[in-house]
Image 1 (cartoon, rainbow, N blue to C red):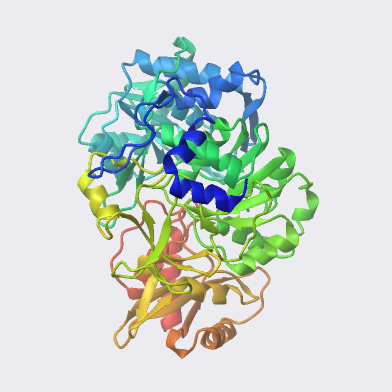
Image 2 (cartoon, helix red, strand yellow; image 1 turned 90 degrees about the horizontal axis):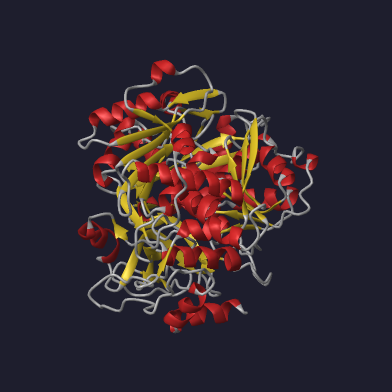
Length: 628
């Protein structure tokens, strides 16, 4: 079917379109009502349908005769471990862990926090919760105790499932001391703490009273069957940053989400059941939920759990080794991972070591991908690198390309076109739709399609204020964008990444595109810093490619000159500071707000998601040298 026809149907005949898609998954009771139509309430999908997402991910495939297919591939260069689990093997552990949770008194509607590293037991814990209707909240392994406390106090879990440690390259990160501290600080008591002992070192001194051993619980428990839950039953909570500082607990439904994921695997990612799909994301992020766990398994794909880094375990050829070894058909990662590989292996020498003949597509999301990185990828990998855009709130892509029929056309630097179900407009500040090539706010006409957030956990007022109050009948994304005459959309960044220089609204992402095109620049971040005269002025921090011999003074001169030529003197970019590395989250997003705060010399809190706190000192020292 033609992509344009699909999209048109999804907007003009929503109910029939999504009813048809819902028929692609197995329900215990197929919904009679496709969507709630109460004008005074936020829309819900398939409200009277009943199903279980663990059944869709595991049991259904066994019933269909695919029990011996590999479901989960675990590859951990940091611990030198590799292991695969068939659907039969996964079901055995998941169902017994689910039985263990029942034996501890957990039941449908309860919540559980999962604080785990990139290991199969994290996926098993998520699916065990889903199997019995327990709402899970995955917290990024190694988060500071305060971040755990915030989530515990908000969602009040009956159980916390954790592991003894995570591993960052060659460093063991003990989790139990962090858990113990969080339990001590939390307002509410957690009834049960289940710990998976990784046995990486002798860790008895880290144990504390009352811990339940994960393996013993699984071994001693009877397997549990899948319980039937309503389509609108929350599958999980995932906390995302809020402007007030307190994270927002995004709640996801079950039936709409399963329908949207099945649709996306077929139409957006173009993946056939039985193939291997790899989303190189931590379980703690939305991508890890949707495309390391639920999406691939619903679609009967083998999914990869990778514990390591793209460039240091052991080298910058790791991604290509995994793609080759497990015959990955399509991969999903953040642009920053490809940039990091490009920096270490600028000539693509490590790529040549591996057979990538079965590799068809590379999907990118999380932040904009610069053209220089896309060019490197095209030259050395030779498969399409497809940028797309979505949010924790949406649960699956909102912008992208429908790659199922190979008729798609990539426009570099664009995040693609609206995905079926997402009626996207570009508005000005007053709510008027803008013509092509005018930058404005990206908004989506309600109702949102299946799979988008149910709301904010137990805080409808905050949900309404954050997303629904800016423009009547529209969801406010918080991102700026430009649409071209062909309907392709270019994300310009969060609204607060658009800087105001002497009354001129300028996109920092546009400047980053120009800065990153410099032949010696590996990656960069442009932020707006305070200026007494102009309000804000742009400031670029750049990382040079390995082996580059250009002086910092000449890099600055080149970039300032090029930005002036490409954007004009109004851009006012006069400061370019070379740093060893940029501060990032563990998932690879550049912490632009932190860079801006450091450059402005303001007080700051160390972000809980930062990959390495030592980078802050490095940048502060560099700022001192730069301004001396």
